[in-house]
Length: 411
Image 1: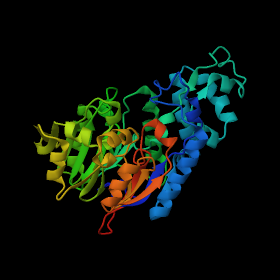
Image 2: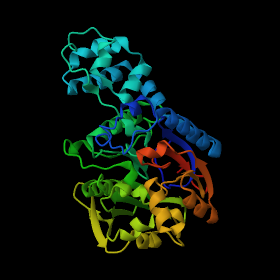
Image 3: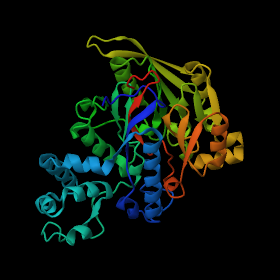
Image 4: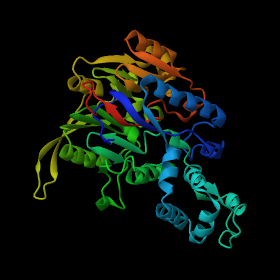
């Protein structure tokens, strides 16, 4: 498997998803803001909907659907790696003395679950009789939960040059990208083809933030990255330098997004579902009035790419029309402002392309889905009462690893 992607719509061959688990039950009405949720979802309902979603992906194109928990369990079978990961996590809490007893009491699969769902002191006290835990506060998290992890798009992004390992904006999500990096570096299915684009060791400890939902592959030669609340323009420049140097990419667009919750990432504003077809939230697309493009200017004495940056005061739609010939646009809510804003709140523009003009979309976005069908798109609807409460759509819930180009080459 070659962890590089040249399109957003080529036939899907492999993808990572995460079935929501105990981490969702860590949400309460009092910590939703801290954990970046607007609501408290019903876990069993989420799991039923997510099972349906994964089944639809497999049935639609026969893609291999990796489950995050399985991947974590498989890499933790390496005892040295397991010790290293948990030693670091307990060290962050000043609880290194727990490590030996902890690893003796929990199975490898349980350890994988704990990395996702977190663990409180009181939960450990039921299993361990350790002097290192006696005086710790019962409600203290020794490992923090990651309830946003079912939005697999954000912890990493695979682009033309390899893998962008995200550096997440908020502390409640920063552990997610660490887990994905461990998987790519250590799992036998990925480690041989893992080519990291970002970050570089020389950046530490000040790494500019970037999240996968802001990254959209426009074509083999162009990449778009949203400059949003969660992605820093410095990260965009660093990524641009690497992808232009190490792939066929000639242009990297920086798209400035309004700092609004429903414009959280670039993929909440538009997604590409065929070589000349996009689905958009028009209010946001027309309000993005500055877009910058990075191109190669020259090389410095060390052989590093020097960039030329040009900013234009026009909407992203105008830019996309120049980048994508004969561009066709489907608007959320079929262009009706009332329907559009309502369906955008539940990610009407965030559909997931499994192949050209074939998408999975939330069933609740009925006007958007109708407009897609009228444009000749096959829309596979998936249940969404609970999954949508986290404010992320079908694209958000997937991390594509491998797609096929229309000419049947690897993508």
